[in-house]
Length: 90
Image (tube, rainbow, N blue to C red; front, top):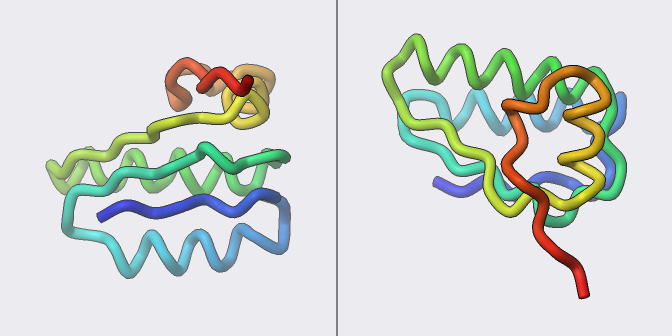
């Protein structure tokens, strides 16, 4: 399954993100972060929790196509291992 992240990952986005991840639990998941323009701490917590849950369940969890905003936000909040190298926007 592929989950497309919202452009704005703020407080309002955390609940829906959590719900979408709960629905996807038990199967491999790829998180498409290519459209993220702002990345807040609460959504980071949701993603880190999901990453740990998928690891506990023995299922693949991958974040792909990270935008610069997503990758930079993850690095600033100390979660650089969460984000792959950002995609290059030309």
